[in-house]
Image (spheres, rainbow, N blue to C red):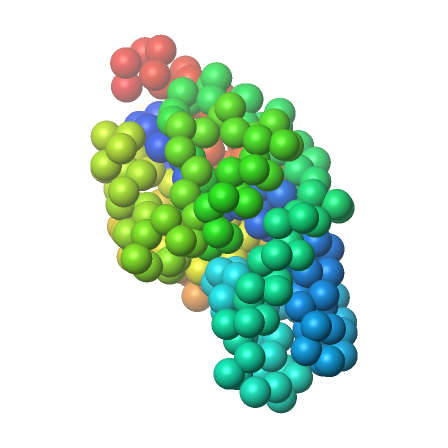
Amino acid sequence: MVRTLRSIPCARLRLLVFDLDGTLIDSRKDLVESVNAALSQFGLAPQDEDRIASYIGDGAGMLVKRALEADGADLALAPAALDAFLAHYREHKLDHTTVYPGVLAQLSALQAGLPVQMAVLTNKPVRPSQEICEALQLAPFFFSIYGGNSFATKKPGPEGLLKLMAEAGATPEETVMIGDSEVDIRTAKAAGTWSLGCRFGLSPHTIADMEQQQLVDVVVDHASEWTEALGVTTATAERSRGL
């Protein structure tokens, strides 16, 4: 179901920016297994999948730090544990990761129906992000894929989103940030853009919080609702009339 808190001016959109984990791809199992592999190297017990999944969203460094904190481990281990996590994840990032149902069809429809430029802005390191997008046939839809180490600051800082707007020649009013977590919605707020929250991803409870606080503009329960949420049919008709 699509829930609209504020109407996005769909016919005027020029840029859609997508989060990656929990929005375009279901990477939960591979991330969890890589965290547990890193913990095991330091003699720490594996953690529950739901527990680790709740740590995702603020980049690899914070993911590992939260796992160590939950175990009561010495945070001095964090740099070495991060290296262990990244080494495992590089080799196993596509063991279980898949594109969410409906995503590829929706990206095609959005690109054809608005039309707009599209990009990815994730807090995951940029190299595995690009490799995953290539492997899962997502990359051709995006003019740019930026990661958590592409800029001096990560989401919810606006630096990456502002850079993408500059590259696309789009204003905040012409841009939508699409993601599954509070981090993405706060990134949109920081950059002054529109926001679309996805409640099918890794952090649906945070999107529910954003909706309750009326900080998100539109919320969907499934990727197949993106075209409806962004008014593709209506926007196409308005563009054809020059509105």
